[in-house]
Amino acid sequence: MINIFEASETNNMIENENLDVRTITMGISLLDCIDSNLDRMNSKIYDKITTQARNLVRTGEEISKEFGIPIVNKRISVTPIALIGGAACRTPEDFVSVAETLDRAAHDVGVNFLGGYSALVSKGMTKADELLIRSIPMALARTELVCSSVNVGSTRTGINMDAVKLMGEVVRSTAEATKENDCLGCAKLVIFCNAPDDNPFMAGAFHGVTEADAVINVGVSGPGVVKAALEKVRGESFEVLCETIKKTAFKVTRVGQLVAQEASRRLNVPFGIIDLSLAPTPAVGDSVADILEEMGLESTGAPGTTAALALLNDQVKKGGLMASHYVGGLSGAFIPVSEDQGMINAVNRGSLHIEKLEAMTCVCSVGLDMIAIPGDTKSTTISGIIADEMAIGMINCKTTAVRLIPAIGKKEGDTLEFGGLLGSAPIMPVSRFSCDGFVNRTGRIPAPVHSFKN
Image 1 (cartoon, rainbow, N blue to C red):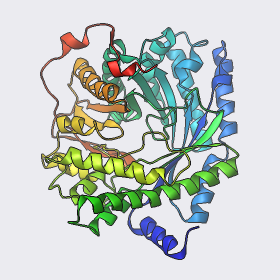
Image 2: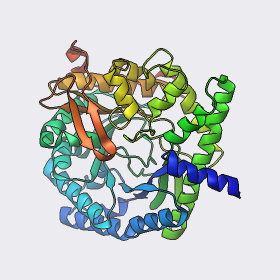
Image 3: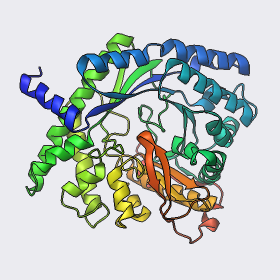
């Protein structure tokens, strides 16, 4: 039971330290919508989503009002559309029609985003997979709420370098297709290694084929709460530091567990998982970079940054695991550049570069996230960056991801302005040395030796 002191403490976290439930995400299976007729399939998809999620937004708002807990986003994830559309879609334009159906359904039920315009191609691509991937630039240009992801590698299968090369081209094409809107389409496109089936966070959310017909997944967030707690133990030992983070993560996760159980009960949809991630926002005081600097770094990117992030990630998981029945998704600390004001500041003062961010992704829960790069960056260079990040995930048996934004018409030192939750992104330099000969090879990078565990 929560006592009076704990209730007061939680209220203070909400009012003064930016504690919120970042998202309630309803995962919906579309496997029963498969049909060889495109119009009939689109109709089934629209009906399934709007029926299953018709009360999602209202329920989230009621829980938020009754418990006094901010619930920032209400979202939907669906079965990867490459699997659903294979029988009906013969061209990229056919898949775009499905994206437009998803967008219409998302608007009609009132959610913030819908994820699952996705393909899983870690070992190879079917014709449907390739058609969907080639349709992504057009689909993201024509829709507002649809998010896309492609899983191109895993520890069990290796890295599909044909897909990696194609995704470099798709990222550039998506930037070109949405350049009138600050290349926003690329902010809704994630390339994964070891993508989880139950991730509630966009843009990478999709509803895995092993999931139930519908589930409720919740993502909690509290960078500001963790930083405030660490301010009280400034200069103390690592033991005290770790214990403080664990206790704080427990309290934050318990709030998410409460919301998840209530949403599950009211919507009559099974509870899936809590994602323990510390997801920052552009708001002052809601930054993962600020936590790292509170630990004693002059600026994020300084020597010791990777160790500090590893400590933070591990203690968040240790504390959160004790507060929830089921933990999943990504879980850990997000280090996006555009969505974290502390990260933006570190880039602008010259302490943080892409190479250091790549090193940090070895110990965080996502990867190279929301990074703006010069608009003239070659597609093969983008593919090389993707391949590097996929290799980190494959070798380390963890999820890694890439969300790069080639800023068409802009150069290093300029800024992309998204506004809202996405914030702004300083354009970071990338290596000008070529990797064309490597990327243009065909086939797969094999799975590492430690993947053979059967």
